[in-house]
Image (cartoon, rainbow, N blue to C red; front, side, top):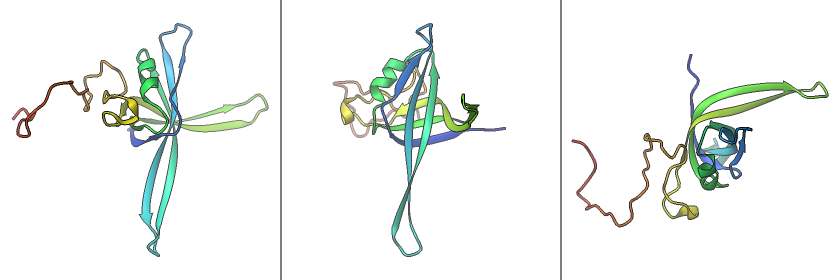
Length: 148
């Protein structure tokens, strides 16, 4: 069985962190909007926005993430779809679809939204495709980092 989703979109609200009683473990919640545009049969542009509820559990780094994941931030979320249901005190059954994220990355460029280019997620994450830029270091146009 396989349950994986990758979304790229804009945050609909600032990310909110809540901590467990131990003060270390916590959860980050936010909404992410993804857009789809197409031309209808008459040639008119149509657009549809989908809203996704994102849940990210972590042992550390939530303060780091809440500083960088603000409303409007372009971000990538990788995770799995999770369906929940519960019954409230009045006996009404509620359903909720969430993306349980295990990887978060800000896709904002350096200088946008007054943040640096450091990706979101675990600050120790070595799988980051967008490393922070080193101040004062420049490369010639012909120099690259390719290993071959």
